[in-house]
Image 1: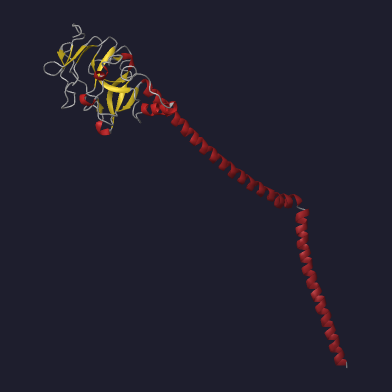
Image 2 (image 1 turned 45 degrees about the horizontal axis):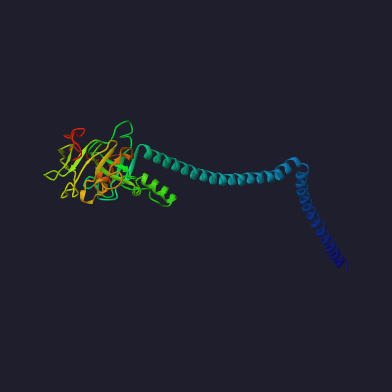
Length: 306
């Protein structure tokens, strides 16, 4: 009995000890957790400046940072788009300015012309792009015999303006002014054979053209061509020119307009300029060959119309 009682007491005491130990342990753990919570609370309350200003403030700071980053990214994107549009705008402006400069330069100084026919062979070939010097006759000089000139044939070779789409005509004129298209139907390139006051006759007993009674050795004429299959004897009025192509059998020139208004004469003020250079193709780069065929010709005729 005593033994059982002792065991019972021992068991009870051990149970109580276990409970008290567990209570102490749990109390200790709870206390530590409470302390941790208290520390956290004190961090939140006591260190409101630090905790909130630290953690909470850091949140908005980070958010603001990310917001700034987003703004910066957005601004970078906008800046990229803006710079891209500025680049295209700048490129378009520069291209337009260059085009205007070229058109003005072509209109007043040096204009390329595309040779569309064989009427000036062998001097000029089909597809050549010649550079016409518009200043050659700008300051008092006039075309001389032997010059290769470009002129507007309206009223002499073409009787009246040609009709067409005005917009298409402007575009074509702009392309022609840059040498990218064939010249207008009223533009011609020929060689000056007679100037104001000259008497031009074809042909003498040896089949040659004479100017003011002097035979002209036309070495520039296409090999195999006769100087002219059409006989003529004319006196060139002052202020006009008598012009012919070098490929006589393929050229429609002053000879073909003898019976029309103007008699095939080209007014000097219709001359666009003098063809001085061949600019294209590369293999044809050169000056337009000059000639001394008219060196022996006196300045003006002394005889009347034959």
